[in-house]
Image (cartoon, rainbow, N blue to C red; front, side, top):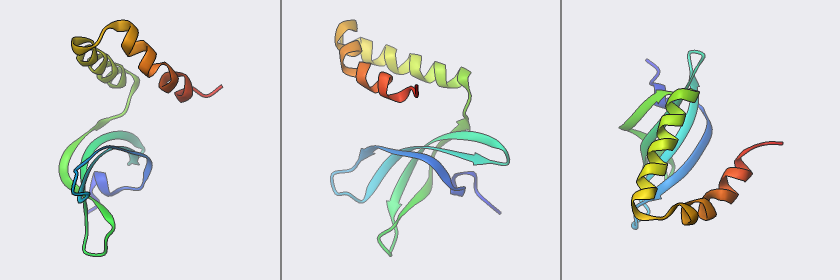
Length: 101
């Protein structure tokens, strides 16, 4: 049986790494049976020193609606501790670099 989070990735970004360097949390996008999925998944180092996905994490279909909701939630979380100008100033470059011409 093929696990959803074992499918080849076409986007992966480390969003957290433990200080000991033996565990990572990654945001990953892959395609499974024709559907794109977004994962927040814990990765671990195997006996060969290669990173492997664990079963710990979440997966959800990647679509505009749930991506928008996730983005809105992150903005709300940031706004609890920062003011709007600081959030915009910090993330402006990231947003502008993310959009292709």
